[in-house]
Every structure is written in C-alpha cells, then in structure tokens.
Image (cartoon, rainbow, N blue to C red; front, top):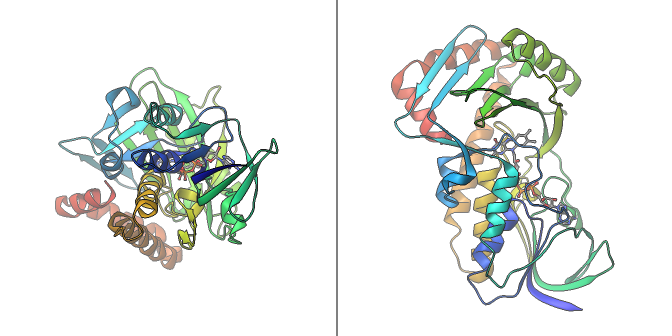
Length: 342
Ligand SMILES: Cc1cc2nc3c(=O)[nH]c(=O)nc-3n(C[C@H](O)[C@H](O)[C@H](O)COP(=O)(O)OP(=O)(O)OC[C@H]3O[C@@H](n4cnc5c(N)ncnc54)[C@H](O)[C@@H]3O)c2cc1C
C-alpha cells in the first residue's frame, strides 16, 4: 500500500487551494478527484475581492470584472458603482484548470477519474480497489462529502440552487439581485454577468419552503423581467451550510464538505479557498493561528444573523426588503454593506 502524509479528497477550489499550500512543503501529498476535469460544478462563478485576496486570478481566468450592481425589490431599485471592481466572474472549469496548473512542477500527486468509495483507519479505497494510506486526510469533497459521512456528520442545513446559463450578445453591465419575498422568501434571484453569457438563478432552503413553488415563482419572474432562456437548460444543485467544525484529530473538512457556504447568499468559493489554505497551514504547523479561518467563521455568522432577521420578519419580510432598498439609496449605508460583502 502506497502511503502519503496528506491525502486530499476532492479537487474543487478548497482541495486545490489546500494542495497548493502544501506543495511548498516536503510532505508527500496526494489529491484525488473523481471527475475527469476540475471545476465541473454548477455555480454562478462570482468571486469577491476577499476571495481574490486569497487567490489572485490572472485576467485570462476572469470573464467579467464588475463594478456596477443593481439591487431590486418589488418597488425600488438601488444602483451602486464602485471605483474599482468588487466582483469577478469566472467559468468554474477555467478556475479549476488554473488552480490545477499551479500544481504543475510541484511534487503533489494528482489523480483524476478516481472516486474514493471507502474510508478506514488511516487508509482509503478507490472505486478501482486501489488502497492508499495517509497520516492526514482532508475532506474537500463538497456537498455530498464521503469524508464528512465517515465522521458521522450529516448535512442538516442546505439550500437548493436553480440556474440557467444564457448566451448574450452584449456584456450585461451589472450584477443584479432581486428581492421578492412573495417568490423567493429570504433569498433572492440573481443575474451574474459572464461576458458572453449570464448566469440567472435563485435559491431556497427546501426545509423551509417548497422548492417547486420557488421554481414556479422563478419562471414567472423570468417572464415578467423579459429574460428569455431559449435553449438553456435549468440546472440545480444543493449547497451545504451547516458548519459543525473542521478539525477531527487527523481528519479535516474544508469548503462545503465542512458546510462552510453561506445559507443566506449561497457564496462558497471564498470560504472554500480560505478553509483549504488554513487547513494546509495547520497541518504544516499545528500551532498556526488560523486567523483567516476565524474571520471567515465570523463573516458566516454575520450572514446567519442577517438571515435570522429576515426569517423573524415573517409576513413583514417584504416591508423589510423595501426598507433595506430605501437604506441602500443612502451613500454611507450602501458603502458599508458593499464593503462587508466584497
Ligand atoms: C447554483 C449555485 C450557484 C453558486 N454561485 C456561487 C457564486 O457565485 N459564488 C460563490 O462563491 N459560490 C457559489 N456557489 C457555491 C459554490 O459553488 C460552492 O460552495 C463551492 O464550489 C464549494 O467548493 P468546494 O471545493 O468545497 O466543493 P466543490 O466545488 O463541490 O468540489 C468538490 C470536489 O470533490 C469531488 N468529489 C466529490 N466526492 C468525491 C469522491 N468520493 N472522491 C473523489 N472526489 C470527489 C467533486 O467531483 C468535486 O470536484 C454556488 C452554488 C450553486 C449550487
């Protein structure tokens, strides 16, 4: 049996970032990805400045740099223009290919087309029957994480995201978000511009609201907004947001395997990058002060609190959204909110 110091299961943004950080060390590292390519994942592909700070992306990976945003409620619209872009959209496969390329010429061993099917004590088994030993195991295997299940942790809180990817002739000029309590409850519909296409979607927590109702409302909203989906297909995928810890003796969870996405915004790439990087640093130095991880947990808690306020508002949610939009027309509040999210 071949043995590695660290085995990372999953080559999403979390696993690849973890591998990159470990590649600077002398540890023997194996990254195992079940897919043939990296980044084949339904996503609106929005990365904020916070995320770019962890993984600065070269221009060829960025599809659109966005400095305009429009926030809509049923009655109002608030526009924001920032002096520098605060959101960067990417194609997830291109992001995956770029992160993978950062491991070229390093000692990290990368195996694609390899699904981990069993985890035992300090060893794991692939679908092919191949067995590998490890000292540390990093679960970066996303929403349906096997590593997480091996630890006895179930996904208790999740969103379902629905999305169309629609070709457009001209660049869509702004990120747009639509609050409509009647249709999307606490959540919202979005338009993320990607140069020659737009990602248009919405999400909801299926334990709180019937996803079929949201889907119906989403299609009514598309019609009202005049967005034609043409040949595009509606895709959907869950998002885990029930963080229950990331360190379990010699096993770590990162990204969505750790439930680190936001249940309010659906954002998860930034969380995946930070947690992947911080876990690698902890493996390299158990005394590492995971300050960035603590900031991330604080950020997620703040978003949870905002979500709780909207939940608590119940039937008054629509009025609260109108009030928020009204506040967004006040410069200092708008700047504060923008700074928090970017
Ligand atoms: C509709 C939608 C829109 C979204 N939009 C945004 C957005 O705009 N911005 C944002 O920040 N976030 C967004 N997210 C969330 C974001 O996509 C995820 O949070 C992020 O991809 C999590 O990264 P990860 O590395 O933890 O997991 P993933 O990206 O899910 O990667 C996990 C990897 O593990 C592999 N894997 C799984 N099981 C195994 C196994 N047994 N063996 C080997 N490999 C395995 C998978 O093939 C996959 O490559 C969106 C999500 C959805 C559903």
